[in-house]
Length: 576
Image (tube, rainbow, N blue to C red; front, side):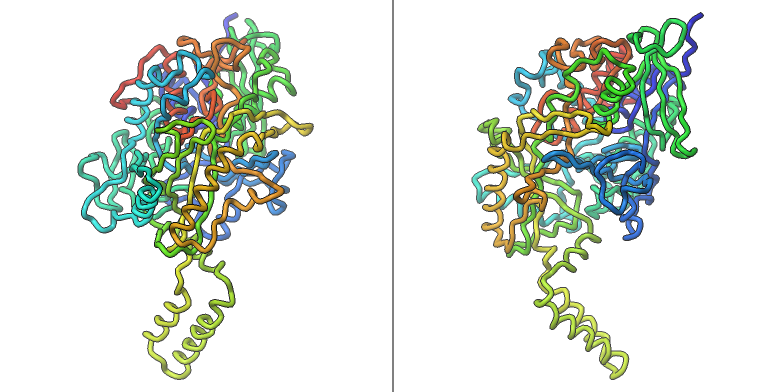
C-alpha cells in the first residue's frame, strides 16, 4: 500500500531559510506544506516594552537541562530571546514567527570574493550565488537609508563614523538595509506613514526609533513574516503552526512505518510538542523535510536524531564541525566628547572596512558598523551615571519640586531642575561599535551528557582578529574623547567568552561526505548526505565565516535549496 502523506513538505523553523522554503515549496505544492515554529506570532505593536514584559521576554523550557539565568531556569517561558551559554562563546537567537529576522540588524551585504576559498564547493562560489543574491535583495527590499533634506532623516552617528573613517584613512559606506521606507525607493514615504508592501502586508515607513533589535512594533523591518511567509500563508495556503517544538525526524519504510534503517525514499514522520496543549506530542507524515531551525537548533535536532533517538544514524561525523561565530564582537565607547546619539535611526546605517573588502588579510579582516539601541535603554544608561556627580542635581530637583508644591515655585524652574539632573548626556555621547570578521570557523558543536548542545570555541586561535578589533576600539575612544572603552563584560579576563548573534556552520555544504554534511550538487543542494528528501536551509550550511552580515548569504543559499527541490528558478525581480 502506498504511503499516505499528510504533506508534501514540512519546514522546521521560520527564519530566512525556513521562510524561503515554505514560500517556494508552497508555490509548487499549494496547501500541502506545513511550517513548524517554536515561538509565537508577533502582530504589529505586540513586541514587549514594559519592564515586566521585557523581563519575561526570554525562551526557556523548564525540563531542558540548559544553562540559564537563575530567575528563568525553572519555569517555562515563550519569549523571543533565547540566550545560550557555551565554552568561550555565548549565543543569542530568536524564537518567534520570522525567526532571527525579528531581531536582526537589517543589513544586506555580500561578502567579498576572497571569502569563498577552497572550503567552499565550486558550485557555491560568489559568481554562482549571484543570481540568488539578487533575488534575495529584491524580496527583502534592501536599500540604503534615504538621504534627503528632511532633518528627521539626519542620523548623527552615521556622520560620526564617517569622520572616524576619514581619521583612520578608510572609507565609510552606507549599507543596504532591509527596512521599509515605502515601495518607491526614489520617493520614500514620510516617516510613520503606513502602506501595503508589494506582497500585501501592511508596514510603516521607518520611524527611526532604534528598536530594530528588540522587535519592530511598527513593522518597518522587512522581517520574513511580512514577505516570504506572508505569501506562503495567504497566497499558497501553507499551514503555519506556531508554539510547536520539533522533537525528532524518523524515516519511513515502504509500508509507511517508522524505520530507523530507511533512508528517506518513502518519506518521514516528524514529531513535535504542542506548547499550546500541555506539550502533547503530535506527528505528521511528509514526503520531505527541510530543517531550518537556525544553526544551533538545526545542529541540535540532527545530533539528537543521530545520537539519542538513533532515527538518522547515517548522518556523518562532520555534523557539528566547523562552527563559526562570524567574528562577532561588540564594544562601547562611553561619554565621549563627540555626540553619537545612538538612540535614533535604524540599528545600522554604514560600514567601515578593515582588510575585508580591500587589502584583504584573512588573519584580521573585519568590518566596523555603527549600532543603535532603543530610547528606553538610554534612560537606563542615564541611571548608571556615577552617583556622586549627580547627587547635587538630584537634590536640586527634589528641592524645587517641594518649592513648587509648597512655596509656589514656577513650573519653569522644575523643568530647569530636570535639565540639570540629566545634564552630561552619557547616552547621547556614547557609541556602540559592532564588528564582525573572519574567525577561523573551527568551533565544534556536540551534545553534552544531558543531551543539549555545547560549543567548544577556540578563542585563542582567533586572537589576531579580536586584537585587531580591540586596537581599533581603543583608537576610536581616543579620537572621540571617550572616557571609557568597554568590550562586552564577558570578554574580560579570565572568562574570555565572546557573544555571537550570527552562528554559522555545522552542516556545511560539501562535494562529498568526508568534507561536510550537506550536498553542494545542484539538484540535491542542501540535502543531507545519506538521506533522500532531508534538507537543511539556514546558516548551518555556510562553510566558513563570511565576515559581513550573513543574512544575504543565508537567504541566497536557501533560495538555491528551494530551487533544487522544486525545479523552479526564482524570479530575479522578487516576485513570489
